[in-house]
Length: 259
Image 1: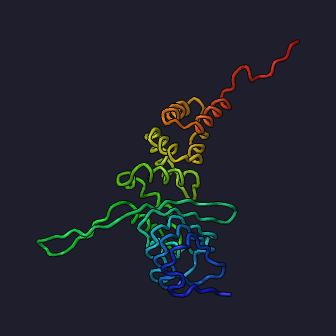
Image 2 (image 1 turned 135 degrees about the vertical axis):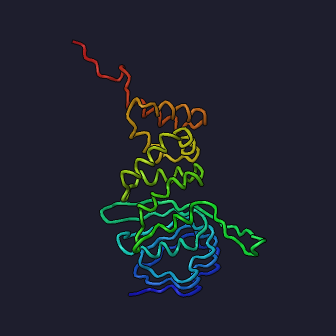
Image 3 (image 1 turned 30 degrees about the vertical axis):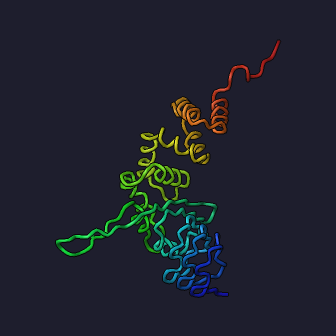
């Protein structure tokens, strides 16, 4: 059974916080969720849904899109992001349990008057608009997405860069060796700043990923422990000391036998 969400079906509803689009949905009508300002999560059963004009326009709190069956048409993902100026995290699930996690940064425009020419010039701020263009042939263009990294390093701050970096390395869908090296190079150059950010955000997934793949003796663990102590993060300190113990158990922890 094909489903269509009608034009203006939920427009101006300020109580909706999460929407799960039903299986079989083929269309989401014009301004169907327009101005749903509390809406923060949209779950899509597949990406081949036709998104009509302004379906999610002015949904200013929308920050997470979850898309299943990512192997198919992902056009609707691009169409939803088109109306977004704020930062949006996208989770895409594929067959065999594979996942991609992508951050699309916020951006904004300003119109500046060119008095001699009597025209207005549109000036954009942030890399978000360029990231929104990372689609090709109805699919996410991961190569293009990763290719924006150096530009993002110029225009974005640690909170954005730290998440892009972590998401792409932890969920390396179609991640090339060149892109992987570029992300790792940034990590090596900015370990202290990134550790502070992950700890302040209590982002244990990122901390575990970077710390537990690091070779013992590389110097990262002492830096992390000192950083956690400086930030007064007792839960993180406990985890780090446990990791240190697991890597280099004390002599007392070994079994002793009296002959």
